[in-house]
Length: 139
Image 1 (cartoon, helix red, strand yellow):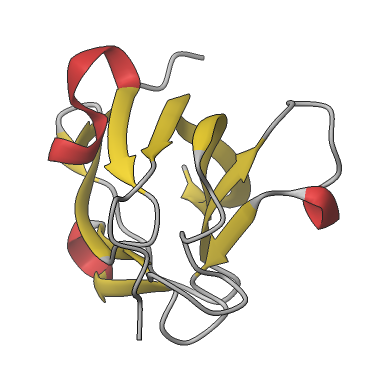
Image 2 (tube, rainbow, N blue to C red; image 1 turned 180 degrees about the vertical axis):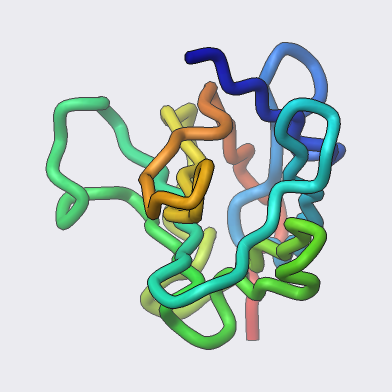
Protein backbone atom coordinates (compact mmCIF):
# COMPACT_ATOMS: atom_id res chain seq x y z
CA UNK A 1 0.00 0.00 0.00
CA UNK A 2 1.43 3.36 -1.02
CA UNK A 3 0.48 6.49 0.89
CA UNK A 4 1.78 9.85 -0.28
CA UNK A 5 1.77 12.77 2.12
CA UNK A 6 2.40 16.30 0.89
CA UNK A 7 3.33 18.68 3.69
CA UNK A 8 2.90 22.19 2.37
CA UNK A 9 4.94 24.48 4.61
CA UNK A 10 7.91 26.79 4.32
CA UNK A 11 9.37 24.93 7.30
CA UNK A 12 10.14 21.91 5.10
CA UNK A 13 11.69 23.70 2.13
CA UNK A 14 15.19 22.93 0.92
CA UNK A 15 15.40 19.14 1.03
CA UNK A 16 13.73 18.85 4.44
CA UNK A 17 16.43 21.00 6.03
CA UNK A 18 15.47 24.12 7.95
CA UNK A 19 17.63 26.68 9.75
CA UNK A 20 16.06 28.55 12.65
CA UNK A 21 17.42 30.67 15.49
CA UNK A 22 17.59 29.26 18.99
CA UNK A 23 15.62 31.39 21.41
CA UNK A 24 13.11 32.60 18.80
CA UNK A 25 9.35 32.07 18.51
CA UNK A 26 8.05 30.33 15.38
CA UNK A 27 4.56 29.30 14.27
CA UNK A 28 4.64 26.88 11.33
CA UNK A 29 1.38 26.19 9.55
CA UNK A 30 0.96 22.85 7.84
CA UNK A 31 -1.57 21.48 5.37
CA UNK A 32 -1.51 17.69 5.39
CA UNK A 33 -2.49 16.17 2.05
CA UNK A 34 -2.72 12.47 1.24
CA UNK A 35 -2.95 11.32 -2.38
CA UNK A 36 -3.77 14.87 -3.54
CA UNK A 37 -6.70 15.22 -1.10
CA UNK A 38 -6.82 17.00 2.28
CA UNK A 39 -6.00 14.47 5.01
CA UNK A 40 -8.50 14.89 7.86
CA UNK A 41 -7.38 14.99 11.48
CA UNK A 42 -10.83 14.24 12.87
CA UNK A 43 -12.06 11.64 15.34
CA UNK A 44 -11.28 10.32 18.78
CA UNK A 45 -7.60 9.65 19.43
CA UNK A 46 -6.18 11.89 16.69
CA UNK A 47 -2.86 13.49 17.66
CA UNK A 48 0.11 15.30 16.08
CA UNK A 49 3.72 15.23 17.33
CA UNK A 50 6.88 17.05 16.31
CA UNK A 51 9.94 15.47 17.92
CA UNK A 52 13.54 16.73 17.83
CA UNK A 53 16.33 14.39 18.96
CA UNK A 54 20.10 14.20 18.74
CA UNK A 55 19.83 10.53 17.66
CA UNK A 56 16.98 8.50 16.22
CA UNK A 57 17.30 5.66 18.74
CA UNK A 58 16.95 7.89 21.80
CA UNK A 59 13.72 7.49 23.77
CA UNK A 60 11.07 10.18 23.42
CA UNK A 61 11.70 11.05 27.08
CA UNK A 62 15.26 12.01 26.04
CA UNK A 63 14.16 14.19 23.11
CA UNK A 64 15.64 17.67 22.82
CA UNK A 65 12.08 18.88 22.25
CA UNK A 66 8.74 17.21 21.69
CA UNK A 67 5.60 19.19 20.92
CA UNK A 68 2.17 17.59 20.68
CA UNK A 69 -1.44 18.46 20.01
CA UNK A 70 -2.28 16.76 23.32
CA UNK A 71 -0.83 19.79 25.16
CA UNK A 72 -2.43 23.20 24.75
CA UNK A 73 -0.18 25.74 23.03
CA UNK A 74 2.24 23.27 21.43
CA UNK A 75 0.55 21.93 18.28
CA UNK A 76 -2.86 23.35 17.45
CA UNK A 77 -5.13 21.57 14.98
CA UNK A 78 -6.75 24.59 13.33
CA UNK A 79 -8.90 22.90 10.66
CA UNK A 80 -9.26 19.19 11.37
CA UNK A 81 -11.41 18.48 8.33
CA UNK A 82 -8.75 19.83 5.97
CA UNK A 83 -5.67 18.54 7.83
CA UNK A 84 -4.41 21.94 8.94
CA UNK A 85 -2.36 22.49 12.08
CA UNK A 86 0.21 24.86 13.57
CA UNK A 87 3.41 23.80 15.34
CA UNK A 88 4.28 26.49 17.88
CA UNK A 89 7.94 26.83 18.80
CA UNK A 90 8.43 29.17 21.78
CA UNK A 91 11.60 31.04 22.71
CA UNK A 92 11.95 29.95 26.32
CA UNK A 93 10.48 27.81 29.03
CA UNK A 94 10.65 24.08 29.58
CA UNK A 95 9.84 23.44 25.91
CA UNK A 96 11.57 26.47 24.42
CA UNK A 97 14.08 26.78 21.61
CA UNK A 98 16.65 28.70 23.68
CA UNK A 99 18.70 25.57 24.49
CA UNK A 100 18.54 24.01 21.02
CA UNK A 101 21.67 25.41 19.35
CA UNK A 102 22.95 22.77 16.94
CA UNK A 103 21.70 20.44 14.23
CA UNK A 104 19.21 17.75 15.17
CA UNK A 105 16.98 15.10 13.61
CA UNK A 106 13.25 15.72 13.61
CA UNK A 107 10.11 13.97 12.54
CA UNK A 108 6.49 14.92 12.30
CA UNK A 109 4.01 12.15 13.13
CA UNK A 110 0.25 12.01 13.15
CA UNK A 111 -2.08 9.51 14.71
CA UNK A 112 -5.11 9.66 12.47
CA UNK A 113 -7.65 7.56 10.63
CA UNK A 114 -6.16 6.02 7.48
CA UNK A 115 -8.79 4.19 5.47
CA UNK A 116 -11.00 4.02 8.55
CA UNK A 117 -8.34 2.66 10.93
CA UNK A 118 -6.50 4.76 13.56
CA UNK A 119 -2.78 4.56 12.68
CA UNK A 120 0.46 6.36 13.52
CA UNK A 121 2.26 7.60 10.42
CA UNK A 122 5.43 9.63 9.96
CA UNK A 123 4.62 12.35 7.45
CA UNK A 124 7.95 14.22 7.44
CA UNK A 125 11.49 13.84 8.74
CA UNK A 126 14.84 15.46 8.26
CA UNK A 127 17.35 17.78 9.86
CA UNK A 128 16.64 21.00 11.68
CA UNK A 129 19.32 23.46 12.73
CA UNK A 130 19.02 26.08 15.45
CA UNK A 131 21.56 28.84 14.96
CA UNK A 132 22.93 30.79 17.94
CA UNK A 133 21.45 34.23 18.54
CA UNK A 134 23.64 37.21 19.24
CA UNK A 135 20.98 38.65 21.55
CA UNK A 136 20.19 36.17 24.34
CA UNK A 137 17.20 38.06 25.81
CA UNK A 138 13.97 36.06 25.67
CA UNK A 139 12.05 37.86 28.40
